[in-house]
Length: 249
Image (cartoon, rainbow, N blue to C red; front, side, top):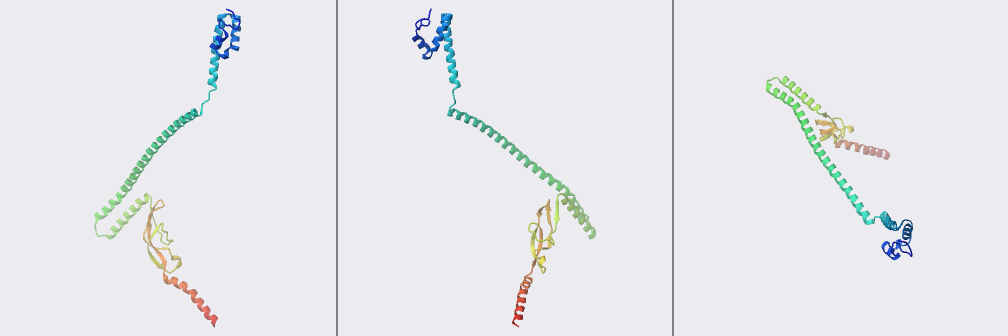
């Protein structure tokens, strides 16, 4: 078969245009004709079909490469990404919350155990003091001096036990009244101005543990009498009156 008058392999240019499309009539058909002239009819047909497939593939690749994501697609992908992050953060939060709850319960249990152990230790030390009291009571006798000495020994033993657990006693006598460390149960009239609002008597000693007051001292505070205050206020008036009398003379 030969190529003449726009015919290729017995097909007219219109048939080629119908099969290959408008775009293949120009350059594609010329390439096919040139190949026909060189290699023969069968090679021209195969080359034509091959060139047609390659062009479609290139066009598809170009279309796929130039395709851009729309705003809706981007929003959907962003929402999915944020949902994954949110689920991860929620799981981390729940895990941390569970760990903290377990830690809190463990600490409360440890604190209760420490309280019981410290209470047991104090009671065990006080039992020896209780035993000495029972011995003193069971001893009997009319010797007051020996009974007094026994009570003093028990008292010192009790103080030693309490001091080992951090208890300290304090006195506020001679100091300015401090409501944080003392409780006023009465007043004592005083004549000196420096004794005003000062602790003059102590009814009960105060106690503290590690610097924290657990029982304030009960004291009596000095207070100037009304007569002394009246005398102080009347003296300037008397001087003024005497000065006025001298001026009249």
